[in-house]
Image 1: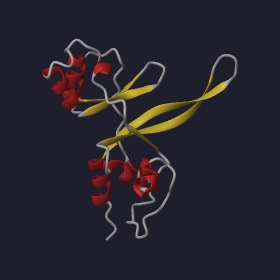
Image 2: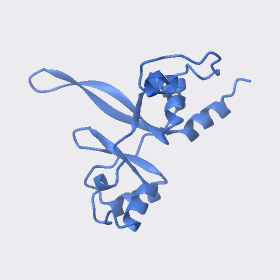
Image 3: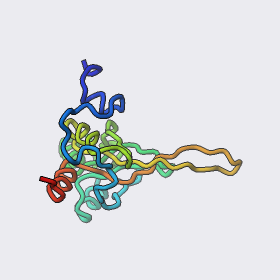
Length: 165
């Protein structure tokens, strides 16, 4: 069962450190990865335009975020192309037709160990930062902002460049 699986428990925030012999980077915070700002697409962007933007900017994937800041999902170049070529979407359809709406989020203060557990099953994680915002009547609410997208290659690059043998 996933409820007794330590990796599932870490990924979902129920356990912190379960690995007995942690590598040197295990407790380093995600914010140390030094990632570039993400490319973000709005939901009304067409599949055709998304493909063009991703290819032009050299990205494989991008978060799709509503004007309100709500993270709707991830669009990937391969999924968009395969959906269009298979006839499941048209080039003129909005990217919301081809997004992955099941994705993992991780915070800047989370550990690379937690990220590692997420990336064992997922191709990427969206790095989010919670920010308190106030509206006109003075009431506050927390809003998640997309800070970046991280892949296993990003983690591997960090570990190999900073290896503490």
